[in-house]
Length: 133
Image (cartoon, rainbow, N blue to C red):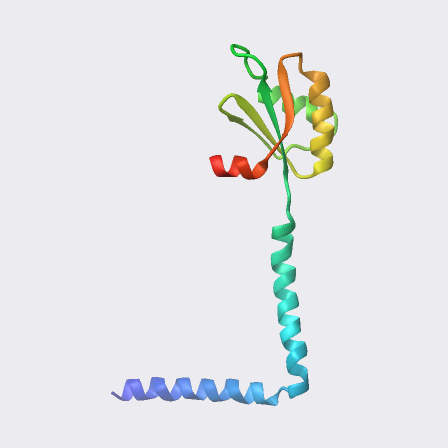
């Protein structure tokens, strides 16, 4: 019983200290403090929301053809200064992830020159890819 009373008195002391601290803050500062907290939260959350990766898909245009080797494509694109996030086989296609739209567009140009006829190189809808995963 005494232990419960001691815990209760300890909690009430903490609450009273917090209340004293809150009361010590001038009321005119309160809107600025709230705005500052929201700004800090926004600074932490927004970069993650703004991150946008682009995806290129390579498919064969006719049955029986095989996909190019992902490591070979990685080497060729890297030699051109194009940074690849990942290359993943997905059924009858290769999915290549890039950090930026510029990298994706440059890769599409290189891949169209590099790959022989019979391959389709196109921008891939990333939301569609995520729903299949």
